[in-house]
Image (tube, rainbow, N blue to C red; front, side):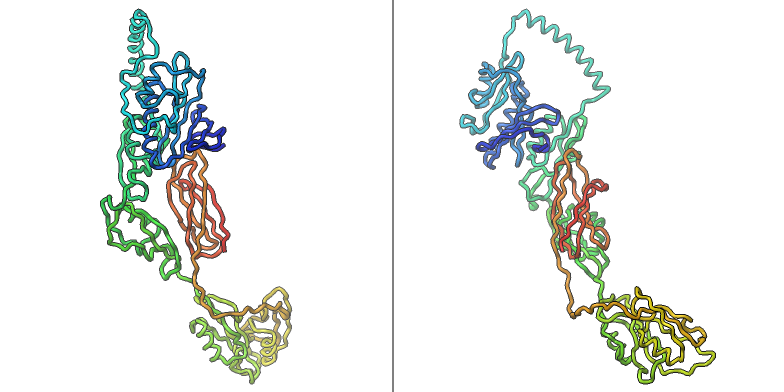
Length: 545
């Protein structure tokens, strides 16, 4: 069921008429109400605030069947209780009270409520309503009905006895169980409105200004949060908006070189500033380190101004590829391997006997040609032909592992070994294993395991082009279910590879919509995960390329 202003469950709605829309709803305490919602322009808001105060006073005087009236930016509405009796003309007391407030009785909806009359509706947008605030004084409001003097005397005596008894009872209850009040939702209210609202609940106010583009003196957050139950007399701490140039400036700290997010947020908090947007790119520093900040250290800003930072994703992992080295002289093969970025220590040469016309040439290479390999960890093993040697009883078995079939047969012929080939189709090309093992005393025979007919691997066309990381913007949206109390929310970005990345940390409550954009050069799908007070709440996967 839809919620209006996060409080009222709407049961029906009428089409808008002019500036107002009518709703039938149920309040959070179960009371059925009739709500009149007003869409006001800014120059009407001051008039509505005066209208709100009039209704509040009428409610306190027992003249209005008012459940609540709200006046804050983006929300102006009145929740009336549903009438129980018949509609009737106003009596003298109601007529005088409405006239003193500047409202004619014709625009008031008046019904019987037991032995008295009460207002169940008072039009705000009517042409008959006052356009300017009216000074009110209802201290001498006449009673609705008169009673005989003898009844007043007896009633006064009974009332005094009852008051004495209630005083003792209330004093006892106060000592045992003090009353509590509920902290209202002050966000969006002006500072003056918050003072008046808290004063009605016997709560104090401590206000702290913060720099914000919101209208000046607008409440942005409160502590304790809305819905908290407190004893009367407690203090509510609120933060309200002011332009940055009206707040005492603070010095921007040095953030470059700090670990994100803990060290960065701690340093900003100490300086009275906040964290702005966070972007991440590869860099020659450890992942998670701040490498740049939008506002340089040492500049002076208004308190709570946001500072944008650039965070390292860590160094890019380089890759390279090798050409086909088989048939080349050893020195030419070394030169090409060095040109591809391999260090001399990562090139290993193993010599095997071969025909004299092949001496000094590469017979096989361990890294396949034209396929990318990591520069930092790649090791190239080259099989190079040596002159054939005479066999003897103490001759050692050569190492043929890694050679192609032609190279293995040539080496066996030069060593005068009888060769047995065992074909294993699911193995890579070349010699995988041999018996006897390399370096053992030769018995004149050699058994090789290899794949003679491998499936051809398509050779991609390799272009010598350096690709740069490209930033992309990913959007996330999370809806917080109604009824969840205010708590800390963290949105994490989880790439396919690497550690989770903190995107945002904020305070949310039931009914809030937590959404935003995240910039990242990380390719592939990204999963956004929402944690509430450190516990998993929801996640969504973004499959943008």
